Every structure is written in C-alpha cells, then in structure tokens.
Length: 487
Ligand code: BES
Ligand code: MN
Ligand code: ZN
Image (cartoon, protein in one colour):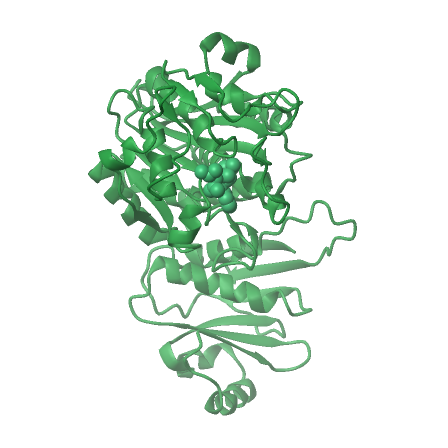
C-alpha cells in the first residue's frame, strides 16, 4: 500500500472526511467537541460506554463513508510509544476502503517535541511492503493530511525522519531480495550507485582481495560462480579528518552452509544472511541523506556460500588478512570468516573511534534471546552502555552477553592458530564472538551485534508488517545522534 502524507496549515474544515483525533487516557471526548458535530458527539459517547477503554485506538464508523478514529494519549508518553500508535493507526486505515484521512493536531494534549513526527514515522515504518515480485499489485493510495498548528515539524526534523525511513526501507529492500537477484555481483553494483547521494564507495573485487591477502573472506565465496567483494562506504560529514565511526556487516547473500550443507527445511531463510550488511548500508544512506555531522565508514563483505567443485572443504586451513591461520571445521560457520578479514582491515585502514559489527551469525543467539534482543558482545563497557541505552529508546533492544578467555580457549586448534567452531563447551554465540575478537588487533573499542533473531520477522512486529525488519538502522542512528554528533 502506498501512503502519501501531506501537511496543511488550515484549520479543520467541516467535512465528511475521515478524522483522526487525539484524546486523553480513557477516551474523555469532551475536549474534541468542537471538531465533530453534535450528532457525532452523542453517537460516539454512547458507543464509548460499551467500548474497551484500555485500548489505545478506537475507530467508529459513522456512516459507510466516514470513520472517526480516536487515539488515546497517556501522560508522559514516550516517543517510541507515539511511534507505536502511528503504526497501530496504519492497521486501521489499511483495512478501510476510504483512502483519505485528516489528522487533527489541534488537540494534542502532549508537549513532546515532534509528537506528530514520531506518530507519522511509526505509521510510515509500519506501511512498508515488499511487493516487487507480485504481478498484481494493489495500488490503493492512502492519503493522510495533517491539519492544525501543531503540525509544525521543522524542516530539519522532517529531513531526519525521512532519511531514517529511507535508510530503513533500503535495508529492508536489500534483505527482501531473493538470492538469485541480489547475489554479490548485483549487490556490489547497487552499492556503487550510492555515489550519487554523496557516499564514497570503494569496491575490492577478488583480484584485489587476493592481493591484500583476505583469504578467509575469499574462502567462503570460492564455491560460488559469483564474485566475492569487500565494499567500503564512507561518509565524511565533518570538514576535519577526525577518526570515523566504523560499521561492519556480514553480507552472505545466500548461505547454503557450503559442503557442511544445511538441511532443506528453512534453508530459504538464508536469503537474509546478508542483513548485517544491509543495516550498515541503510545506516550510511541515512547519514548521507540527512547530512550527518559525523565521519563514518561502513564496510561490508559480500559473498555467496555455496557447495561445488571449488568450494571450501572441512579441514581446509586459510591464512587470514591478519596473518593468523584458521582451520575450517565447518563451512557453515562462514560469517565469522567473512567478518574476520573485514574487521582487521577496517581497524587497520580507518583507525576508527570504534567498530560495531552486525551479523546474522548464529542460530544459538535465537535460542538465547529469540526476537526480543540482539546479542551484544563487546570489549568496551562505555560503547556497550551507549548501545543498550540507544536500543531501549528506539525499541531495537540489545542484551549484553559475556566474553572471556575460557571461552576463547575453546577455539584453539591443533593444526592452525584457531578453528572456526568449537565442538565442546556450548555457548555457540559467544565462541563465534570470541573468534571475531581475535581479529581486532589494536584494542579498538568494538561491539558485535548478533542479529540472527532480529533481521526478519515472519509475523510482523510493532513497526513492521512482517518480513525484513531493518533492525539496527534506527538503533545505530540513535547511538550516533546521542553520543557522537555535536553541532
Ligand atoms: N547464517 C547462519 C546463522 C543463522 C541461523 C542466521 C538461523 C539466521 C537464522 C550461520 O552462518 C550459521 O550457519 N551458523 C551456524 C554455526 C555453526 C555451524 C557453528 C549455526 O548457527 O548453526
Ligand atoms: Mn552458515
Ligand atoms: Zn550464515
């Protein structure tokens, strides 16, 4: 469904159009008397007697053509809750056949800055659909008009909300594309086109990667007929050369498991195994669109993990970009091989303030945290706290998990410096993170987010209607805004 939002500076006209009105908790409608007719007022008053007042939105069909939707706002409502209300409104207006709504902001009892901005942001995020491959598209257009003096979102705030939506939607688009379309060659090509919004793009193809010695990344992709790539995406929003913030993403365009082949059931889910990279790309797009006053770099490793005559074998030993050697005991533990080279390279080349990596890295993190929290693994308490706080604010939550030397020992190998899985000791998500940590060579503050449970939602969540969530774009944008962007 396509949603168009327009702002009108006018007062509410007496009209037969659908109305959205804000009321206080428990639906006291006396304050909105002026905005509806007496007949409507008494009709709604009657219906309210038998309505569930604990709900946050109630909708009333006044005629077959006119709907009035009441939205109850509790005192001290948080921005994330305002977003959820907007998203709930989408659930109602998406069902109706009427296509034009008027939101009256005159009666917002709340003093949150940007109340209406957050409300519409939630509505927009929830309205995203990926229907590119449906031959018959529903082309209904829902127009939402915002009336009244409290719709005065500043230009800057509008740019910010819009950039964040575009960044999130871009991440969702990339994750939603099937493996036959968004293979590494196509992905690299799409990233190249981001030059036009002011991002600096560097694409390292196999030849260059070979010369650089990125053999763990290359190893994962060697069974595929597609290329393997490392792509760096730079945004320099500051005139000075201050250290950038670095974001690294796992971009396994499809993960069959390789020779350690996955079972058939749910293997199709592995089209979203590039979600970590998509979040990095979406974040960078957002930073460029809103011209963030920050230096940042995104680094993504793009590969396809396939079995084949040239594929990696269990037992193969690879020399990573860091110089350390890795015994590949399971070709399905491929994400860490891609990230290993990407992390060392990022640290060495950009000397960033910090590195945050994102990856759909382990099934074990879903066992531990489900779809509530991403797993956070970090060598730095300050960065961890900043991520946890940002996550709570935008409701893209993270939960810190442990790292320590006893876990680290579990990936020591007899034949090489380390092996890519542990057979004893459990803690599969932690040992994966320990593996990554071995590739941070200069003690740069680093955080790893295992988003395997967050990237895709079969049934939808508060701010998405099912499918790719874009989880992480809003989290990292908040992290940056709250802690690293100062005018
Ligand atoms: N991409 C998977 C992890 C994953 C699983 C993401 C389910 C999303 C949903 C990763 O590459 C993988 O296969 N991990 C293995 C590691 C194991 C071989 C040590 C896993 O989790 O089983
Ligand atoms: Mn795998
Ligand atoms: Zn994977």
